[in-house]
Figure (cartoon, rainbow, N blue to C red):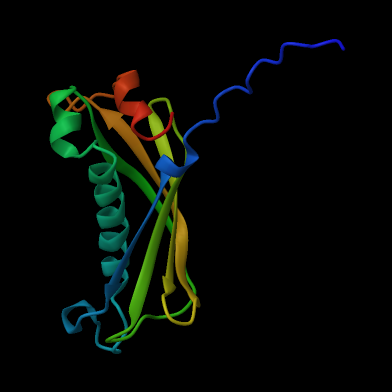
Length: 149
């Protein structure tokens, strides 16, 4: 019987480190005059889920700053499908779909947690900068590894 040594498959990137979700309930202070969640609130939720994601993988603002880089938003692109209303349970998901260099792109999806109905989706482009100079700066490999890159 011939035996062939088989190498283990290459390590898969840690894709699960690149996604995160938050759930919340719409509060009255988040509504506009029409009784819908105000558009700017969705932006806040998108930033909140990204920051909470970074904290969850051990790469929150203080960690980034200590390593000499921070991530800042360069561009949001959102498509509003349906409004969220007072008391709605909301599911906010983010996934890093591109990263590892000077920028990262997150796909964001906000849905009604009960019905699954899509409310808002889009992308956010984040760039890495030096917090002192404000100039672009590549993040250290150890920081990127926390997000599975």
